[in-house]
Length: 269
Ligand SMILES: Nc1ncnc2c1ncn2[C@@H]1O[C@H](COP(=O)(O)OP(=O)(O)OP(=O)(O)O)[C@@H](O)[C@H]1O
Image (cartoon, rainbow, N blue to C red; front, top):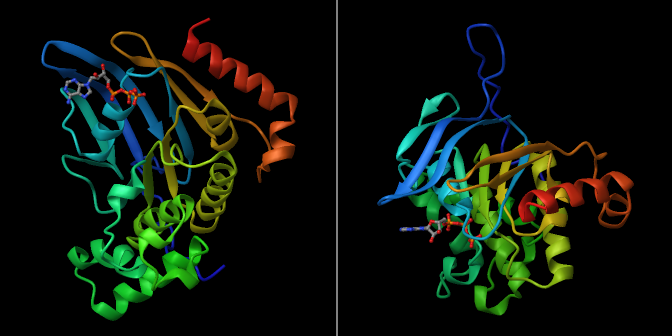
């Protein structure tokens, strides 16, 4: 791997010297018109943590992510990123969506796609290209800089989307169903890529998934949403050994146990 793109920002500390969580959610609720979708959410995400958000379809996962990233103003409560309230996507937070096909510009090369958002960050052309090349190397696409998105497989396109988020040198990445549109083998490869990148760069990851195995395999903690309006049904700590490995980790009795617990939480059985 190349040199790290980010040198994780030292954790800010509060008056008592305790580390400030990168994300602090207090009393968060959201309603669409008269319909209350989310209510009373309180939780924190530690710097460097990987947390998956799960819950039944329509429970409010995307709404929660939108509120956490500043894309949507919650009806109630506050979200603090690095100790500061947010009302628009903060500089240190990058977002990766499921639909990579639509998020990449077909007329731009892979490198141009990755460096495009850096223009607004005020970086010069040389710095942008260097950050873009480093990010592409981080996701194993150092040789694809001059290709166009339509020349790449779905999994490679999603790696470009991840590189574009990393080039921004975020301290946290938020992902909404990022691996939902690829085949099972590519999905497993992308999961392992995410774990490696997260380990290498020390970034915080918050990821929405419908896939229970994926949530348990990737997470330090799993946030299960449920109810109407939805709240935190449970926050599960995943105490499986790291580094994770697709076959060995999933064969552990602890994996099967956590998997069943998450399944029951989502199905409410
Ligand atoms: N812009 C909107 N206006 C009105 N209602 C909305 C809007 N966006 C979402 N909703 C409703 O809010 C609820 C939660 O939607 P959301 O997309 O957050 O759920 P989700 O858990 O991400 O769903 P899925 O798992 O199916 O993607 C749903 O009932 C949805 O119909």
